[in-house]
Every structure is written in C-alpha cells, then in structure tokens.
Length: 514
Image 1 (cartoon, rainbow, N blue to C red):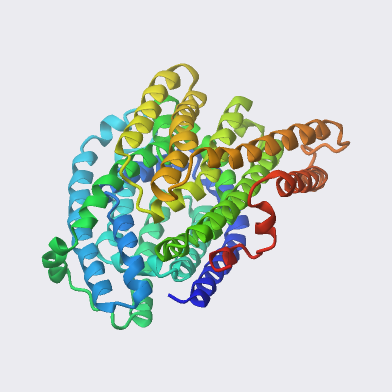
Image 2: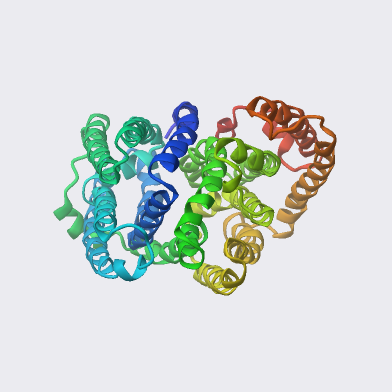
C-alpha cells in the first residue's frame, strides 16, 4: 500500500467518523430522554441487559476477526487478490460455524430467562421477543456481513461507518416518533430488527461495488483452512483476551442487574452514554488508523515505529486528560438539567468511573501496537486480569454495589494494563528496554495530576452556578475547560516525550508517513 493511499484513507475514516459523531451526539441525548419518559427506565435497563447478555455470546467469535485482519495486512499491501479471497472465504466459513453455535447457545440460554428475570415488571412475552429480535440482528453479521472484514483491514471503515451510522440515525428518529405517539415496546423492538436487515442488504451491495473481484466461497473456505494454521493459533490466543475485554468493558450492566437492580442499569447507562459519546469523538478517529499502524509495523522501520508510538501516546494522554477533567466537573450538573436530580449517582461512582475511563483511553496506543506485532501470547495475563476483575467484583459488589463493580475493573487493570502490557510491547515488539517506556510515561501522569489540581481549585471560585440552566453550564465550562486544556497542553509540550514532534505533524494521521 502506498504512503499516499494510507494517509488518504486514514483522513477519510476520520472525516466520516467526525461528521456522524456530531449528527448522532444531540440525537442520542434527546432520544434517551424520550425513551426514559415514554418507555420507562425499566425498559431501557431491560434492553441494555439483554444486549449485554448477547454480547457475552458473541465471545464465541473467538477473536477470529482480529486474527484474519492481522493476516490480511500483508496481502493487501502486496495487492495479492487471490490470497485475500482465500482469507475472507476462510473467515466466512469459520463465521458460519460460529453463527450456528451462538444460535444454539442462545436457545439454551432462553430457557433460563424466567430465572434470570424473575423479579421483572415485564411479562415474558416482551422479554423473549426482544431477546430473539436482538439475536437475529446479531446473527446477520455471522452469516451475511462477514466480508466487511476486508473494509476494516483495507482502512475503509468509512464505508461501514457511513451506512451503519446513517441507518442508526434514521432508526432512532423512527423509534422516537413511534415511542412518543404509541408507547409500544413491540414496535420499538421491531424497528431494531428491520433496520438491522436493511443495513445488511445495503452494505453488501456496497462491498460488491468496491470489490467486484471478491468472489468468496464458503465451501472453498472450508478446504483452505488447513493452509492457514496461523489463524487458528492467533485465534486461540486472542479468545482469552476477548473474554477478558468483555468482562472489563461490557459486563457492567449485567453485574448491576445482578447485584443492584434493573432500574439502576438505566441510571448508570446515562453516565456511560455521556462518557461514551465524548470518548467516541476521539476514539473512532484514533482507532481508524489501526490498520495503518499494522502496515507501518509490517514495513519494519524501527526508528519510525518508535517515533509514531510516542506521538500517538501524546495524543491519547492529551485527549484522556481533557475528557476526564471535563466530565468530572460537568457531568453532574448536566444530568441534573437533562434528566433531573433523581438520576444523579454517588460521587464515588463518578470518581471510579473516570479513573477506569482514563486507563482505558490511554491504553489504546499500547494495544494498537501490540496488535500490530501480533503480541497475543500472554494468555496468563488475560486470565489474571479477568480473574481479578471477576473475583473482586463479586465480593465488592455485594457491599458497595456499582462502586464495587468499578473497583473490580480498576484493580484488574492496574497490574496488567498499566504495567505488564507496556513491558510486553517493549520486550517482544520494539525490542527495547522497558525503562525507556516509564521514563516517558511518568511525565504524562505528573503533568496531568498537577494540571487537574490547579484547575480544580480554580473551579471553586468561578462565580457561575452550572446547575441554573444550560446557558450557565456552557459558560461555566468555557471558564474551566479551556484554561485546563491550555495549561495541560503546554505542560505536555514542555515535558512529555513525543509531544513536540506530534504538534508539528498535525493532522495526526501524517505520523504514519513522516
């Protein structure tokens, strides 16, 4: 793949993600308000819990998609269409088996729905209807949409994002209208399923147009699997990491339902919606260069790779610091004005949520480069992280509820994500001394801590009440967030490794070629 093509695709991915971000941002908060008011917090909590249960079943994907993407980087770079067709066919054949497995497990799981939701206010008819509708939408990806993996590996996520986000916007508008006028649970669920089917049809037509030569064959994929043993090897390694990642990122609502209540799933979901939307603005843009980093590593220029690593570290820490500081000071008055004081959660929950969020955002560069090097062999680390998370959560949630669930996540992240993963990358990927990582990383923590404390004390003396109205909240945020971003940014440029060169290479995607 040419350098020009890599940059152009990265810019296009970022541009499309940015456009749809702003289109969906206001709609998300507006629709959440309507759904809570018309359908109720219990129904919103129910749908969130069911989708997370099905997310657990999707672990049967085993990480095959990641393994195949890793193996697609080189043939895409070389333009080897024959090997690309073989790999996508193998992927399709494996996905078909997985789809049948998920279907079978889901049917068995459905038998236990009366036990899982024994205290719910809903009749089992609506629960089963929602469960199998969400399941059907999920299975479409395994039986029909598997070819979209080539779009991802070929840095054409903008195609997927364009159709998926446009469909989501239209779906949300239709759901809001129908929920407001009819307040019918079944209609809301049917719209979810119908738009999932329409998205699949349109996406596959677009794939045929972009790759008219991509004539995959499931039967050929079955016979070709033995020619690519590395896919199975990587899959076995990645699966454990997938299981661990699910426990850390997608199991919150399941644990809250189990240890607290269905209604609190919706209350906590309000906070997650806000943090998710803010991080999405940057995460989708940064993640869009994942394939570009894979191609960069494939070229093998170690000096260039290390330079890009530290520059992307600067971008991650800058974004994480601004997001965490902003949410800490603004989310409580925002929820109060948006939904009402009854939806505000305890301050300890907010602190733990933001500590977890800071770690999850800043880990992105380490994960991206570990993935590019194929560093999935540390199975023990995934087991350890998942075990700590599950063990602490079960014990702590019984005493402290949501705070205990978040504490379990944080205590599992610290030893593995903060310390082990950078060590693994520097030793097995970069082939550099681990000490070099911390001589650079510690500066980011110090600058963030000092900047946060300085502006936190300033926030107390700002003569504006952010709880009064949205105008006051916006004005308050301007007097607080902008000064923090300036002080924090200047601190990073003066003291943090990679910051100065990153500033000189805006837009950030040019890191891949400069």
